[in-house]
Length: 148
Image 1 (cartoon, rainbow, N blue to C red):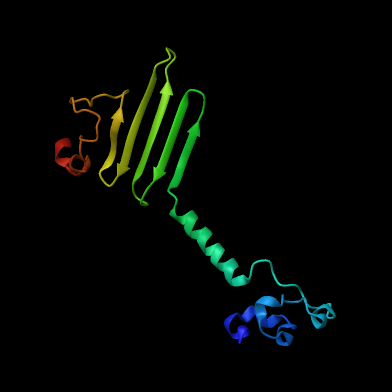
Image 2: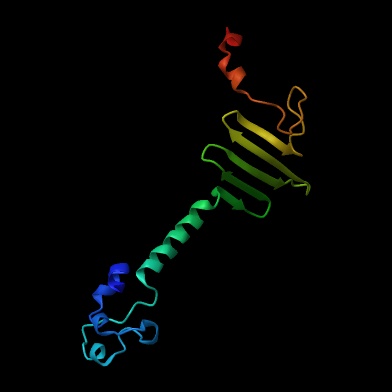
């Protein structure tokens, strides 16, 4: 009965000699099982639980964000992450020789690279604040007529 539920139990030759209740008789502790040197003791964690633990570990690793790059030096820090396989977000910061700290927080997705927040690049060339509101650059890139 148990071997049909747990096929790996069938490999234990002493299983057929055990009588209920199984919870009170440890596997491979009976006299006949101890007299057979070819019998191996029961694994610490049964294989079905090992598989379940392995699947849980794989799910945990797959759920974490994919860190593409993480650099941390004395005066420079850069971090880049991929959130959905197509969107990259990140920050980089540095300290100037005068001791001022500058940073840029950005996003790069289907709309291009955009600065979301920065104290190093406060406005674009046309005066748009670096707060992510500068919009998509794809419409200008598609318009080749401006180069004629």
